[in-house]
Length: 484
Image (cartoon, rainbow, N blue to C red; front, side, top):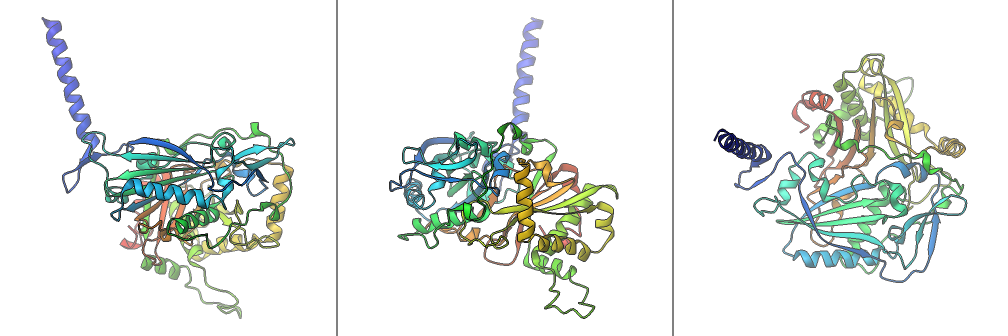
């Protein structure tokens, strides 16, 4: 009898635990719909297809060059775009996107290929009509309890990308895996009132500029254009022709740091007013020693915002005065190399630029001092510096890892200059554009323009939990309420 009572009490405890778990796992929203809380949104893949260029192109190859190779050890670069429906049927939208993709891949055929290596061990992009092409996943998302689908507003209001990681394919997939995997994967996820387009690009094949060139070209075709307005410049050997063999064992897999329990990611919105105030705070000293604004221009929006972010994150980390800290910029070198490359250059043409000092010196000086360090580092990275960096790397090839960004680093990727909110496939512009969960680490920052064409900037920051807690309550960082 006691065993029966004990068993019954155990069952009751299980039920109570189940109720408590459910109550902790969901949240009420104003319209009464329940959805998952503090858990990743669950996605069901309904179909997987492969899209090849519409026309037969034959066999084509292009070697990866010094600007590409260091990123073989990074993960696929991910972007997530969330759209509201315009009355079109989801299946019709998916067909339109796939048809447009097959056309745009005629010019961007490298994304329909694979990585390979020649007899000398040099990496290359290979395309052949017999290859599968780009991978496309059709998917649907709901709350997995009541079959109530997640809405666009539900996603737009979320600040933590880790909750949305299943909306983007190839989480935790290394660029090296492009030897077997498609170089482009796209997931089209049906929402209650819209569509999520999640893209994963092999980062050893292209950088941010090339990524958004492809996205805007794809949108052009879907909007009815017979051809894209700007063809990609595909011969990356024009930027660097040196052949470098990379030893694969020197590129060990990296941990997926986005799953670390002590790391948080948050989106901060810097309004146009906040940006203007930050820029003003970094330009309080008038030109001196005979210089003028023409010979000594004020610190730019990027330099000022970068300084603001570096100083604020360093303060939030509570570093000791003697602790080193590094600011890292993944800078576009298209106009810095000699000869310059066109904006349409397809590939990686970025290099990391570093500015470093101690936390005490950084925070003990004015904002203009910090902006000056960043400006000097950017200005010094000319064609000669790029050439030296390339030769040094070719003498001793190293596959980049996160630790290479620097000690106590703040690293900036993406750019508010990318016209991400102009990407219209024929059903309106996106409600939100975000980076995926890949390639995030303590101090990684992604910048995007604000939606609507204003001069505000959205800032995605990944930080250790305690530092993020401090940052969220820093009135100077938040510009006394101007930043949300």
